[in-house]
Image (tube, rainbow, N blue to C red):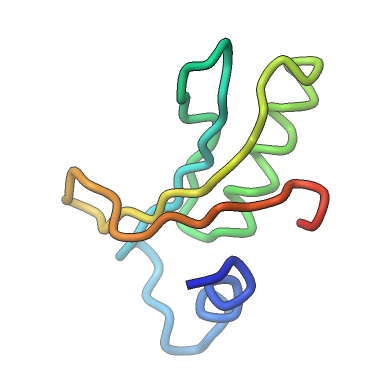
Length: 85
């Protein structure tokens, strides 16, 4: 699924808040780190952008993992270009 499709899905009346979490993932010194978490993808993106700014761009925001609550593995990975979002 694409970022835009996922965003539309979270704005749909049938969307169930709390069924999934979105984890904003970044790279810091070559290591994957979680930099934001949200029940909606737009909130996750907003917080990831704030984290990147606060780090003086030492962290690169590069993807969002979608995880079903209660599961340990991602069910989807959305590669993003921060300049587009």
